[in-house]
Image (tube, helix red, strand yellow):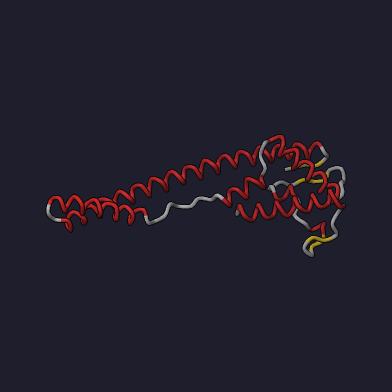
Length: 178
């Protein structure tokens, strides 16, 4: 879902920037410019041109408001979206329990050799090490999940603040925004 939002937002922004530099494109990827998804729509907003602004004027206004909202809110939805996809949650390697078992077996074998039964010591050490490795893995997964949730909440708050700033700018330019 986030990836689609970022792609749509990026496509609209590129379209708006291309227009600002070269004038309105007649077609983008074979689709008439009038049928392109607007920047407002990419943000989940609907901007009605209350003063009969042309589609080209709307693109220019949206690009200007995007830039202003980014500066005013300190949040860039495109950058945040691409970072969220690039740094998405990934679980720690599943080998933690196996690695712990190996370390435990080696330690247990050494202790067992001193006590006279290296095999029994290795088995006990492997079991204890495997359990400890899984506990460490679960804690790491829980911590990574908490960090991902905190980042998600921060991004949601940043996006809402950005949308308010973008809407205020578009309304000042004569659009009705919902």
